Image (cartoon, helix red, strand yellow):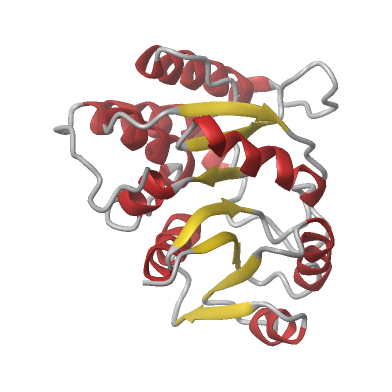
Amino acid sequence: MTIRGALVAIPAWNEEGSIADVIAKVREHRPDADILVVNDGSSDSTAEVARAAGATVVSLPFNVGVGGAMRTAFLHAQRGGYQAMVQVDADGQHDPADLDRVLDGLADADVVVGTRFHPDSMYFVGGPRRWAMVLLSKSLSRMNKGKISDPTSGFRSAGPKAIALFAVDYPADYLGDTVGSLAIAIRNGLVIKETPVTMYFRQAGRPSKNAIWSALYLGRATLAIVATATRSRKTPKGDAA
């Protein structure tokens, strides 16, 4: 198997209005990285626009959500022999200027989470959603024996051990791609660290979940942690040093 460097994975659902710009900015900041767009059952021209922008595109036959799309990306990374993979949102909220920081953190970690909560950040979350995030942060930090201040951040990277694990064990349910995957990583002994990142408002399109999901946020997230924490510990296959 050929050993490759970094893969930037972009899960996308109906993001034709922003995907080309995201790809261009990723290429600007990490010209050495390969770019994979997982077209998650889009009904618009997301796949065609992404392909025209120079990305490799894998199209799913129907919408499976971010978790399912990212499972596809991890399988692609594992089979392609990539040593690092970083997730970037297709809506323009993540700043590709932070790619170096997120990827460089893998030098001494298996998973690096880009946290939106730091002294220089202008990102704000209030109300019940913020309360849920605080609870999740405390719960996962206790499991991790190290601080995880932003458990729902989708801007994160994975090294060889995490790629091997997530290619076979990555939750596809709501919050699974963020909270659930971190709990799985912790239970499997992976090293998780954080690094500060910038978060913007989405450029185009609409969120995959509506406001109703906010009311279920706390309960679903807490159940995700409890369910994963009670599972038996597994050892990732094919973990590279």
